[in-house]
Image (tube, rainbow, N blue to C red; front, side, top):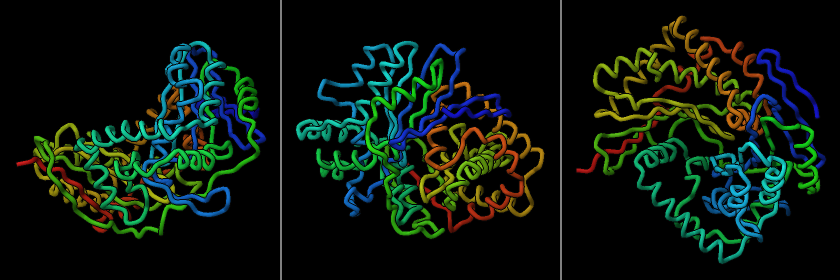
Amino acid sequence: MDKLEYTALGQTLYHCVLPNGLNIYVDERPEYGKQFAFFATRYGGMDLRFRGEDGEWMDTPAGVAHFLEHKTFDTEDGNALQRMAANGVNPNAFTSASVTGYYFDGVQGFEENLRTLLSFVSVPWFTPESVDKEQGIIGQEIRMCEDDPNDEAYYSLLEAMYVHHPVRNRVAGTVESISHITADTLYQCHRAFYRPGNMVLCAAGNIDPQRVADIAREVLTEAPSSATPTDHGQPERPQVRERLTRRTMPVSIPLFTLGFKGTPAARDGSLRQRLLAELVCDVLFSPSAPLYNRLYELGLLNSSFGGFYSSGPECAFIVAEGESRDPERVRDEVLKEAARLGREGIDPELWERLKKAAYGSMVRHLNSLDDTCYELAEAHFNGEDYLSFPQVFQSIERADGEALLREWCVEERTALSIIDPEE
């Protein structure tokens, strides 16, 4: 394995690419008692259309990636989740808009559990009966999410912002969309996305990097492969589809989700755009920001207010969410403050303080094995090196933040989703 040194962080990382195309990253930490492994595929809720093995484009129902995550734990010998838990580790999985990941952590039996993880993820086993049963289980999960005001506000916002991009679809799909999923659908999607060239394995802790590569080479014997081509629809225009959407639910005070439709980053610039956009979120929405304190004193916000940046292939956006008796006034005040900062400039002292705090937070997160593996995997799928973030931070200037505010935080790129109390 190649040994990569990051002197600015005092970190060492091991990396290799197997003949089948799988990338492996290992962060060896002998001083840790715990081990963590994360096996992920570049496949999420937004990947509804892809090119199959025969070269033809295939359309699938919303929710297949999430459904497949649930069913992947099933094997001919039983449930892999239960088997790994009985072997002393904590296994789990998740599906986001662009990634599906399977992982475990523990203090013993790492190599045996790694073999199990790689085996059940790479060898599918579905039956029509088990798929029918899972439709009922996931249908209940979907209904619970539809009863969650925060979920409804968020997905209503994405539908308001995007016209074509499938990020506007719920990761879990709908009860109607998952009714069209069959065992054959799952096998087709597994063949397309669960192949080594479309995946990455990240491990961290008190482990031998070479043993991780050797085990992966023994278990994953597939032929060489590459990433699966996907189609995320027609290019989006900068403007949002709808500027305001609202509905009523049983909430005590109106809650809102405010979104700013951004410009997707270039493949080799996603990490820089993420760090820059997160700093802009801090400038606008953090408790250190003048806007936050002013709106709080006016009674327009409470402590639930906050913001974040999110992105995926061909999409990027900033979101602020919270509770307010006048969400439209909050939107107007945010736009007014963004315009002022873009015109007059961000306070240099505030910018440097927030930048140092953000950098320190990222360094501290390296103490977490799971956070490190997640970040390494996401950066790999974006064609970047996550541990280069110190150099990326150095390249970000206050003028970059002001330019982003002028470009993104304008009325035509802004959408507001409100959940009002029922009468």
